[in-house]
Amino acid sequence: MRWFVRARKAEAPAEAAGPAFGAWVLEQFLRGEQPAFLPFAQLERACSNAASLVCGAVYGRPGAFDAAVLAVPGLAGDAGTIARRTADGFKAALADREHTVLAWPWEHIGTMVAWRATRAGELETTPLGSTVERVATAYALRHREQLTAVLDLWGRVAEGVYRGEQRPDLVAMGLEMLRAFEAARGKPAGGGPAG
Image (cartoon, rainbow, N blue to C red; front, side, top):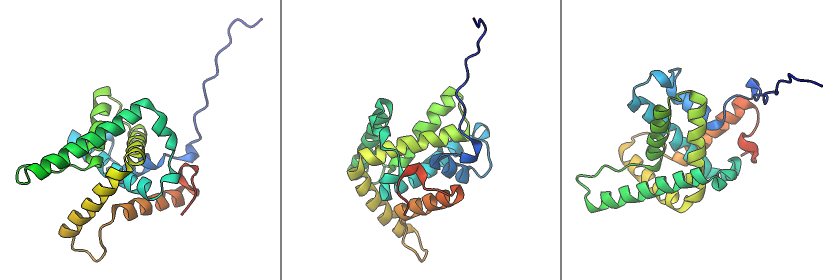
């Protein structure tokens, strides 16, 4: 009889696997900074920027992302909250164009993730980025119609202020980051088809 048997801890995933796409994208925006040492506004902006590219990538290649997030009650609620805030913000902007600042869904995602992480004291890059990816994926898959309209408007607004040679395209930028991530990992993200 064995009296003192230690329960085996679940083995952590191999470090060689590296971070998920959302965490990898967030790392690019953090540029080596630790989230715990950033002012809230900078953390919020990094999370929002990462969410914008994740939304673009999910929109452009939904099969590369885990659709199981749609069945997670908390994430479904978060996606609904993001969609409502986006719709309310757009309505307010149409009603009062001079005094309303338009907020994109990825900005709502960035604020939500940064705020919750700050309140919980859980300010590590990998969990933050993974949460950005999960919320952005749930939003992009569940509210694709709204995201279609948002991306179209974003493209028109960005084109009006951007003076580069290439037309701004958030989906193309998200897919480019996804391809870079896959190249760095040596395999497609999320087990979906490559390309």
